Image (cartoon, rainbow, N blue to C red):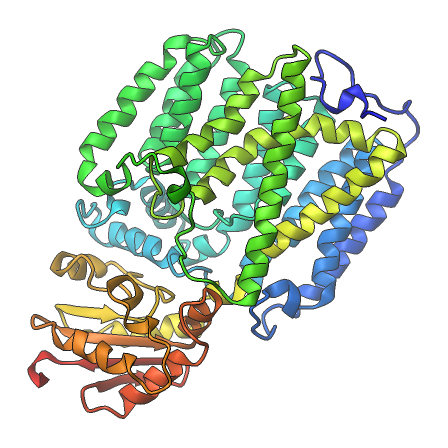
Length: 571
């Protein structure tokens, strides 16, 4: 038995097999969505106080949290099967709420340590009204930072609050743009909604926090929308140039992917005007040349696909991290294989496939060039998500609206994919948390720090460079705050007799030009344990030894956060 033709056919070539129009049939899926919203509303009250576990928030908060995600996925598939467009749209919005709102309401401070580096750039712009060129890569690509500083100055909104609510707002904009992209690439309304749901649901990679990458991704989907309208006749060429220029000054990698995709479409005469990639190339190459010193390390062409595809976490993580990693690998592989299979069948049938294939395959070129600091593989998934969602949407609609023998496996696949994506997204929750009390304690303790100084920590899981003063310290030494796992294998020694601690003090004692502040937090312990860098009690052992050692002067200690200082004159 073979699948119906509508599973892969393009909407303009063969109409999708649907049941005859009936009266409003959204009652049951609407009820299920309401139940999902209720389940989420209750589970949200359990998230802030959920006990830490290596398996993430789904395992630690109320079981109704996972139930709300699965119910939403099931209700959406039922709405599609019943051809209820309005309820399907509501299903997309509900999934955004249940999957992405926790980032804003279940945390008391923005997630992810690296967000604070971004806030530090914004703070510097607000304080000095200029860029600190040459200090770091962020000052070379300041698009989102300049926009945020201007917006927050204009409205009085705190940049921290801006970052706190960035994720759910980002997903609403992302969903709207994916729908527009689906329509621009010839999907009908229901197919475009399904593409939107797929992209919004299975985006486990978590590049949706306050960052240049997230901002560039929204602009990139905008470019894809215009590209879809420009395949038959020139439409909005000036808009492509404007969006591409904005992306170029915002993020280092995204414009390379877009230029590759646009170039392939242009040279194969699937984009008008064909010469549009020439001014885009000039923009990108000129800006890269202007900032070459900051980006040169990422531009080394290696051709080592296997090496470049590796993660930036070389250690074997905890059991929970390994489970989460397996979940996202299965999900990613299933997405790519599904898109490849549909494109292959379309090619076999002599149907148009190349243009959408470019959207799916062009991100793969990234891992041919460089590892991008070990993050290339995550960008490949993120960038290919748009094309894959558009490719699989017509087939998924055909299956869901077809015979039950096809619909039941399709419903199951969507629900399972939602569960895998949720584990991928929330599995590292407790490793990435930045509790406000710890953020404030670290910042307050370092407020009156000596200058110049080093600020060291076991792992990069603390609010580094969170205010404008970081620029002066970075001018003193560009790795003044690098973690020990970057500088040396001091904390890789897993012994019970404290061998690692003398190596730590020996390293710090070799810094003759400035004092060193040692920052130790409970959050570092969870981060290091989750990714297999350290045993869970390693940070506490270092804290105990440091507090008992006259090598250090105590600056701050509340049990959760300890800050100590070693002065160079003590030797």
